[in-house]
Length: 423
Image (cartoon, rainbow, N blue to C red; front, side):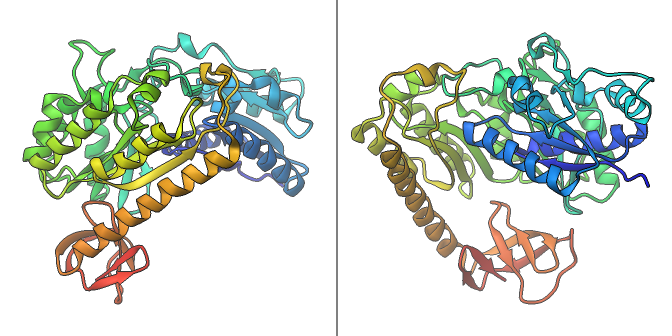
């Protein structure tokens, strides 16, 4: 009895987006009795979890073909090819190509037709286009995610991702607008623009447009789009039009997730980041002046090699100085293949854990302050399910009475329950 392929996604929103595209490609090819694992490579721990997940899936699916793809498969194909549980390893480019799945389906149906090699992983740096046109977004019934960019041209010393994703490439604005129009026609009230290095969008396109140009174009050409969000951005790359959109476009949601990584200038230089501490603070102050209800999330790494107590204190103070609310704290872990892994002054693991815990505690205090300030305010809340939605700032709201999933309702905040508002 044939079964449609099963998919497991590890890592980021972009991986989740690409899993949806692979589902369509594999079904169109007629692939069956397969398990596809879309891996993440952001840390050594992510690769370890991928291997662990593959072993578990093999135990649960002893007769299925196990196919491994994603960033870890791209950066370490031999690691997965050597696993007895794995039948095929395909790269990040190959996984988005219809012929990959067609050839694999043929090979698995008959050992004599369309034979494929175990490892199909080409040079990701040679890729010049992204496959953002493959699906019309994905998500819940209320929110859709649209990939507009892939890859990264920067080489931060801690990061392996460019070697898994390749150089930056953009989906043309016209393709993006057409996708979002179709999503709005399907009833989606909110769209989130996603990418690996979102603020580099447009650099490889004719006339070199900026992300702000894309945002303004979407809002102008799709008046029926109720809410637009942008995912993680690099604040040093934010352009004038994006600042203009923050100031003048209420349909652009007042929540920005910033790739900050640290709060000390020396560590930022050792990370090969392109901003300094004061740049981050200035951006947050400017954005707040333009949009007083703006909230910020941020990625911060604790325990980067050579980080002293004084360096760490600058990161801790940045939480308040930038008025950050939603923190993603990453305890530094050595990632082979990155320059940072070769730095001799690695920080003690217990120190890293302690610093990460202190950063998370600072973030928890900021969340509590934010939640307290919302009580009594009127918010327009997008319902993710009948009893939970999110405000414009992405804060969770619990409703005591059922609402219509996917709708946007106006409600006054009555109180706080843990890390949720109550309406």
